[in-house]
Image (cartoon, rainbow, N blue to C red; front, side):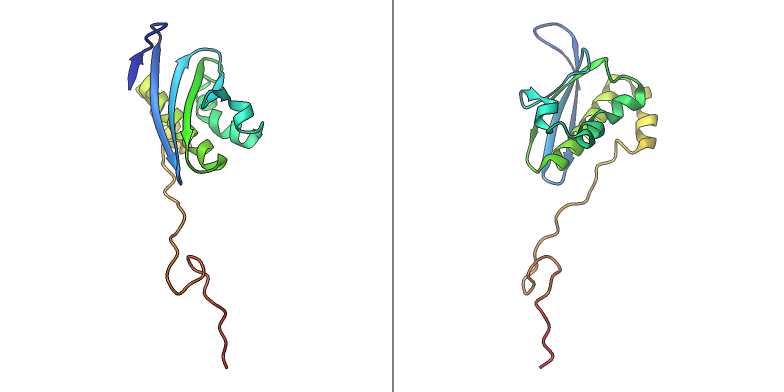
Length: 138
């Protein structure tokens, strides 16, 4: 969804990403490439981990736009890995809002595909989802 920012009149591009239990609502605003998550600096939020930060900025780097848009994120649920992957999906979806021509390169890299893997539920009679009690022959 494209909305004009009330304060500055700049275009704002929205995208929502999900992964496991994490949900990220992402806004792309023309800027300098700054990442802000839940009001904190993105580097601080993701503990300066290059894996998380690389995952998040990958869609922008694919299109060569890493220093042209600020990423503003509201992330909740899950852990840092799930949140980082959900932010990546949100950024990719927002980039598709920005320009429909961005879709093919993002799709070939797999950035527009939601990862369906989630925690499997525990079954009765088992310790965990698949871990059975120890078998005793006698």
